[in-house]
Length: 623
Ligand code: ADP
Image 1: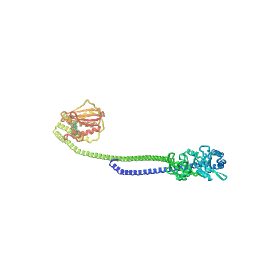
Image 2: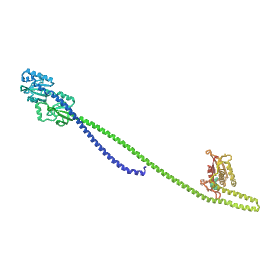
Image 3: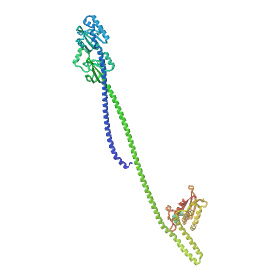
Image 4: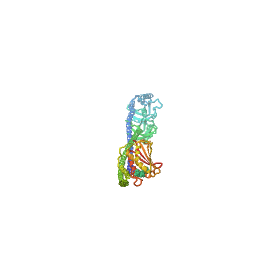
């Protein structure tokens, strides 16, 4: 799957894939950036919305709170609104105003004032004559009594002496305690004698404000804080006052000697009848405040509520953070899911690659198998051709052999035939001569020659005969004896002795008796031929039983001849191989013998004996 082809496959699409992946990465980065920007925008939007909602909520709550506070303040101021009008009819007050020098009358007025102050829950009640001098008061017996003080500078005096109800909020000029003053003219018989004034302390209300934890202030027409939940804001202003305004306030001594400094605001708080946002430093804490104001009825006051927007900011921040955390978590989750699905996709791709690889491998194996089959087929063809060729060669060899054989036969038979004709001619002549003995000898020679010829022909017959006869148990010694008789003449001819190991074993082998004898005759004849010119003309025949091969019987034929030439050793059993001089050998003996031995299931082995000469071993299967 690698190889030059594989590499070629990798480069082309690989580059395209890389380009694709770069483009994909750019697109993915752009998408990520867009998503991030979108998220930032969404977060900003969420934060803004939450902040606006928080502020709207603060505004709504402030509105409610203001309504309640206004009601409370209204109640505190209105509660005593009609009291001065009632007190204006008080006989003791009228009497005292009529006779300010009458100590008794003044004392009665003082007592009446004290009584009212105690029971009507107002801080002070006092009488002022038409010149603005205080002639009697509920606190006449106290060191800081109003008695003797002139309040002509107070607007409430001016208003009331003019016949109207005077209402005024101010810091007490004597006591320094702020209060709400309500003044009513006292008339008698159509004559305006003076003014009765009650001073209502709003301190308990301010105390309530302080305890409520709200940042509340009551502001007068000029924007001066005259009542507040935090005492530190008193007599400070929402915005810087004009010098003229300051002068007016100073002349009325409304807020004593205070500086009337503006609150610590980043910018002047200019309040209409609504709400503004302001950066303020209240209670030492600087921050954004929602400043809401509402006017009181009748009085030219406004109640101002400061709501810190930090809470709303915190609310928005908290929920935005929460949203961010949620988004980040969701992002992580998505990334995780994406990564996992990508992993899954990777795994799928890997599996696909593997499957592809497997398919390719299978195809490769199939191809290899087909190639192998083809090669096998070719091999078989070659084998067949070889066999055929060999058979043909063999056939050709046989034809050649036939020629050779023809020459051999004619050569072999020519001599005895010539001898036969000579002998028969001689025999006829001898008989005519009446030499019966010579004729008989001649006839015997004829017989012998015929036998010899028969043997030659027999050899060819054996060569032609292919199939062996039925195999049977044959005693080896008997077969050797028979063979020895057949070569007796030849042994005698060359003066050789065939020595047999008489004491050895006499096993029985499975063979065809006649053909076994034929093998033995061949081996003995060859041994005798080899012994012909040898100094020792001994041929030894032995029978051996091999321990390693209990099923085999070995018959050894050994001579003391020249032995087998190394070059001949490999060709001994080939048909027509002979080293014997012309006419003496056909080269068929060993080939035939081997063929026969094999048909018994045995074989013939040839070797040179250690002490010289050759040894042929006939291996036979034991019966
Ligand atoms: P032939 O005897 O007709 O030559 P064989 O097939 O019997 O044919 O023998 C073939 C050859 O084997 C002989 O020509 C000879 O060279 C060699 N040979 C056979 N027996 C012996 C032996 N005992 N000693 C030496 N050579 C032998």
